[in-house]
Length: 154
Image (cartoon, rainbow, N blue to C red; front, side, top):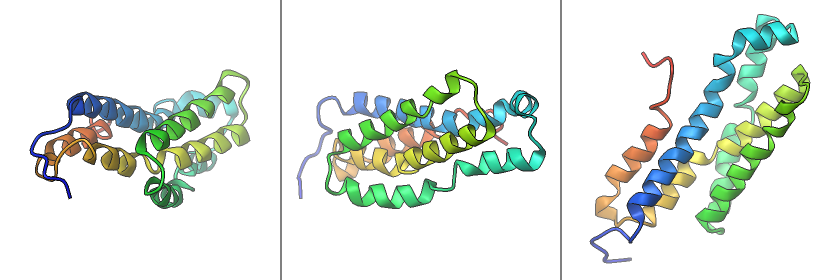
């Protein structure tokens, strides 16, 4: 148990970085829907195929969240966050060439697996910077990163 009463030096900067991390995470989930019509026209996809493509992001999302949760108890958060960011980055490379339905689906599945643990790992990371009594605000800020960029919020 710690008896800290103040956040560690740099805690608010880390909160801002994790907010941006979650903002990118959320953007990755929504970008496919924002480009639906051009993608469907270019790849000659039916509505069913596009629905499968959209849902493919979540095939491994929850499984990876749980699996990485176990890893996060043994590996420092900074390395876990870095690994997720690397996965997100690498899965974007196939998009610079000619993309088929199958490649796009495979990339979305891997992207979902890489993003599944983002919120719990970001929360786990920020808790190390703040004492128990001061965690509510930074947690809320990080949570807003995953919700504030929605183009279709009702």
